[in-house]
Image (cartoon, rainbow, N blue to C red; front, side):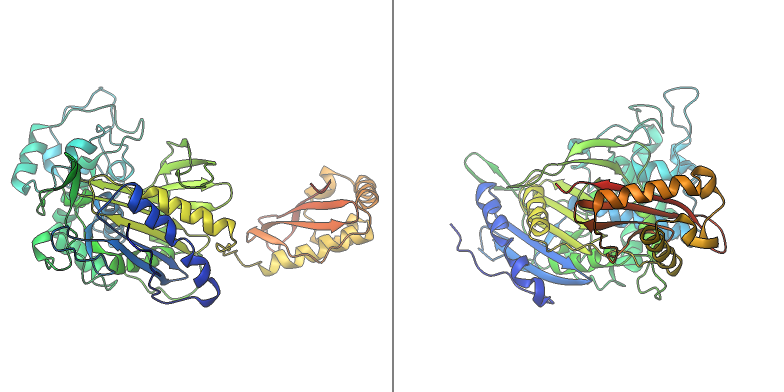
Length: 490
């Protein structure tokens, strides 16, 4: 068994460094149990790579250890870069998401659709996997090296549909290969060159590419499968027409740059743009389609498998976790490789791991690390700022409660407030609440849920007051709703 060693710290955050290092055993345990020849993992926090480590070997024959610069093929984690490049081209006026994909790929014009009322496949449908194409992981994973000429011939022959476009989400590698063709056609340059120019080079990802022949043998993680009681090398697939769905080769150090860039899009703010793509466009990329799924959270050692509502966005899966908030994730499985990433935009954290074993997606240790950090209090919420209007209104709510009179808010009340409940009824409610809770501390901070809404809790002698505040869409600002409820402490 390989000896556990301390992970490397890239840009250490002193107050959480010890906590972050505590998740390292999860990855060592995974390497032993899976098993995998090698694994690289990292944690990005507040714009920096704060933890990075490699376990095992990148090449069984040489025994070279996995390090920060070991290059893995990250399979379907590639799709996010393809999707964001499409959105950037939309921003630049070179394509439209609502346009039929056949406007950019003429070979699709003769396709036979499954029903007479089927809509034509839009660029947006390809991004969301709602084009009606069949799930094709086993087949698609072996198509990476397909030549552009053979891909054109495949498209010209037409493909069978699994369902009419726009009726459900069904994961399609072919769909993302088509997006790669769209990128190359509207730019007049090869897909890989556009990705490098648009994202890789501006982000400093100098060790990242699509062509394994360009990766130095000393840094390439060789891919293996377990068969016949031993490791067998997988063939190295060359760059080809299906690379846009899963062909990216990158190191942990480079991928951390990409993850930090994604996380930097949150929260929305007035600061100047620093990335190669607008922050608003990055946030748009994680807007899911309307085909939602309800599934358990990622399994892992001591992992809370609470249910999440999830939708496939554009190159990323977006989930709503009851405790963690917005969770972005994607798995990557490929002959010789596995990868997994999870990002928590509202908390400024991102985690990822790469392996060099066929389909060994390391979601378990990543998810377990997230849960471990959450339970230990290491994933603080990056809350939004309380707006001036909301702060003023909250002070008036406190005055209303303390005086027991809704009219203490003066002309800050929207007209509906006293129509919904008259002043006498408000007085009765406030008196009853004060009697129920006893002495009450109203100095607690309001937690904003938007620039015009928030919630708060006031602890008292007998339970607490749970409150909600909502402003009206007017200038000047007016209070349209105050909710106050007495709750017993659990």
